[in-house]
Amino acid sequence: MLFTSLAHFVIITLMNNLISIAKILNFHGIQGEAKVGYTKGKEAQIQSLKSVQTKNGTLNIEKLRFHKGVAIVKFSEINSIDELMPYKGQNLYIEKEDVKKQLEKEEYLVSDLVGMKVFDNKEDYIGEIASVGDNSATNLLCIKPQDPKKKEILVPFVKELVPVVDIKGKKVIIKPIEGLLES
Image (cartoon, one colour):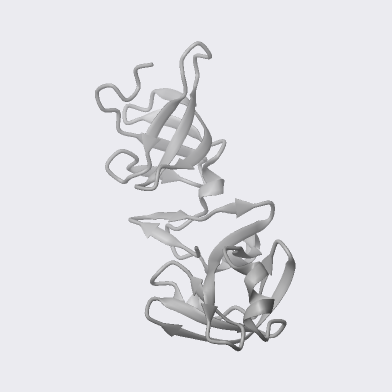
């Protein structure tokens, strides 16, 4: 997945200094072209790519076009279905810094949230973001509370509950609702 925007949020999977931007879903035809899934609305960013990383190494993009909601990609190193099959299901990665250059105003990497201080809308300190998880409907902020005796707090990462994300100030403000902060 490249960028999935939810209001002012960007959701990206981080692997070391690499970011997952897409995934090889299947083959397309017999010449080794791949059907590649990506986040809709980011075709320009996908089209600007010259190469991607996989767990097996670098793949250079020879040709790319869009068809029925997927990118059809011909990699220079792959010339048949048999050569493509070991890559089926693999994520495609690019350098984190390259992704950051493409972010629009108010977009950021989810990995940048980890370690940020969390406050309620009255500016009372709640804790620190320990991780960001995914429950398929939305991402979840896992907040380690200030009081070590309390359980971690899971907050759905949606604009209604997380109205302020201040990347530069390294703080997040959440809107407490009944039952959310009791643990």
